[in-house]
Length: 107
Ligand SMILES: [Zn+2]
Image (cartoon, rainbow, N blue to C red; front, side, top):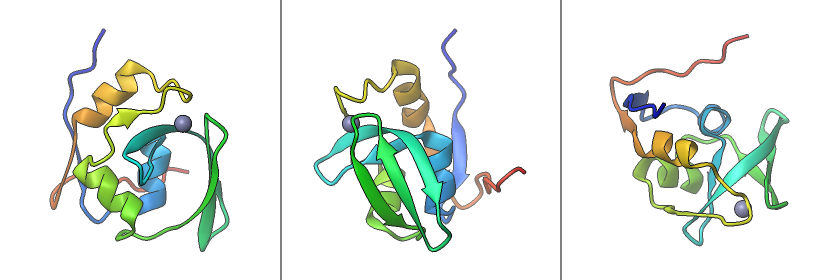
């Protein structure tokens, strides 16, 4: 069954939390990759996509990736990552505003 729920996240949510939640990586080329693993080293994290790309990112609310995710600037799903349709749908129904969920880590 399709999940039609709209989600609202806070604008200032941390990038890493957002990535862990969405499992999507917006590349500068406008391509949306699927995230396979996230290794958190504190000040930075290493992200591996399903198509085998690895990048080091800094956990900043104002980074390019955070902005791109919020504004949905990456729209073309990576064919190699095979991002499932439901995940893209979920992303398209995710919005960011001042009153959204805080997305705190649950331990
Ligand atoms: Zn990819």
